[in-house]
Length: 386
Image 1 (spheres, one colour):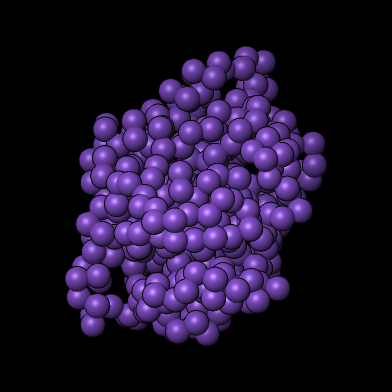
Image 2: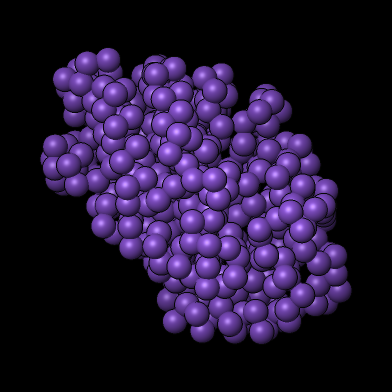
């Protein structure tokens, strides 16, 4: 199982000091956090994609390429790549380039984002959000798997004899997670292609997460990729820790109360009771995270949000020390102990390459769909999503 962190890259005033970091400081802090993640033994660093204040990560592959040059083991990912407003051709080429630079240590998470105005900024209609997600990904899927693509759709100009460059490293496309908090159509899309489904459940109660994950698992099996238990699931979470739980609550409360994403709403106590947010001791984080398996099943990737709401870099790095030294080793051991033999590990470039070279040894049958006609594939997915 993979453990890591994701960042939304917000530039938020520290409510305890009133100081707001500069954009440069925030960008450099995200890099320092990624390097710390590798240092403490985490597996994944993921960055969001935003094009509006108060967020800075507008160019994820630029940041991840910079981090790749300074790391050796860390998987570099996104916690949202906007499949709706980015050109699929540009996504295909940017992430293939990153694959080569990072020696395969990269994957990505497709999402629609949560900022309505981003659609017209990039010439798109928000009312077509789901249709854009379906069509754009159908094209991206082909661009990574076919050397020459002829394609025509609704939302961009046609392609004739087009080859995306560079080609994916070793002929193996980056693994794709489809991220969604509330859209069953995206769970359906992930299942159709046999890709991963990431439910960022930091704002949602367990019952909602259970329904979304169960839908994805059921449809994954329906499309012939394996059993429901073999579906590839990732979850989000948010934690703030101190050795003493009372100290954690006291220190984090002003950040929670003023956070752009959930400040001035439910109390900290209500939020921790109703969602996966954990503010307390390392042991409390361990216990609550292990409980995710009770409603999501055995899953492959756990990412934590550690650095938003104006928390200073020093505090975030302290959090990562606690996560790497006291929490993740226990989680690795406990999740592995109860893991059934048939549940796969999280895909990596090495495992995907091995599966491609030895297809008889792989339980992944999604490549059987790659030779389908583009329009048939798109039509089938649209019907399933409705």
